[in-house]
Length: 373
Ligand SMILES: NC(=O)c1ccc[n+]([C@@H]2O[C@H](COP(=O)([O-])OP(=O)(O)OC[C@H]3O[C@@H](n4cnc5c(N)ncnc54)[C@H](O)[C@@H]3O)[C@@H](O)[C@H]2O)c1
Image (cartoon, rainbow, N blue to C red; front, top):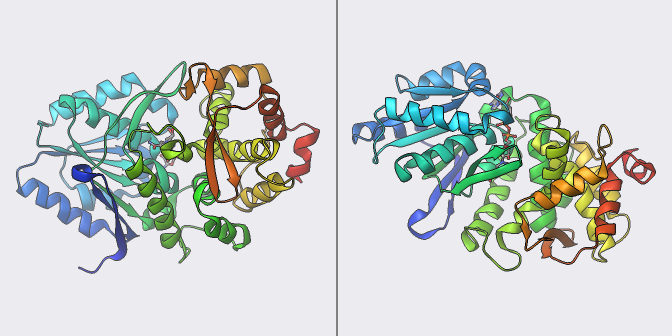
């Protein structure tokens, strides 16, 4: 069968795997699962309920009579209680060490289902079928799995690479527009951190939607960037740069999500705000010229993303949440900044005053008005 799509590899030695990006992948997936079962691998599916209810015929066609567990949509699903339920489900499904978990959904399902696979029987194989744009370009690739604690997002988890990622862009047809935009925040992030040509295309482009002919190419570009960075620094241990670069905007974003309360902002919306703040910090650090905040903000707004907080959040709480973030090293916060648009670096020495100023850019104060009009 000819795939309307192309695959690319995440090169990690024996943990290498393919990412397939295309359209109409249901039949190929069904056959792949059939092959696994024919080879006596127990297979079970963990599926996001929002996706399942939007694509019943895909779910029925691909998973058929497999044991299926649906996860409630939303960030609160990334919890210990959910994990326990998935572990029980896997045990009830007769999952053994040769088994495969197929995880289909957005980043929430991918992170929770992936972590369940990472921990059940000390780690079994899993496949990712990302069904949101954010999951396709980011969370399904690279093997970061985990759940949240009250103290912060993604504080418990494991690196556990999937054995394959299948991104079927047709599944995005039912994604709420806001969720599509949220995924675009990560797409813009890839341009800003490592691909000037991509950023310029997004800056000038006429917009994108789930049926845009350019979408597959753009998703692939993002996956290629992520695959390259992950294969150079799988566990984010590089002293400088490396996988941490993928967190551009995320130190701010996580603080916003934490203080606003999970769910107030979509993750991608928080990332858009974080990218705007990180651009300001890059200006203040002398890397980017004045006017860069406006340039980045205008691009994010083109994809219907917020660049100022809907309601101002208390600065003290934002700073406190930031310092609780897991990226604090010996009490120091490591920031990802842009040396220039299209090239990110990690920086350890950033003044608190500059961080406060950067939060102010998105906090709907007079400085923020410059970028909100
Ligand atoms: N592991 C990583 O490397 C990584 C990277 C980035 C983000 N994340 C995590 O990803 C999560 C966010 O993921 P997300 O933005 O995909 O959100 P999500 O998983 O919450 O999905 C968003 C919404 O879309 C619905 N949905 C999913 N697919 C659909 C479809 N095809 N049609 C209609 N509705 C559909 C879901 O039910 C949900 O309501 C966060 O928890 C974040 O921490 C992880």
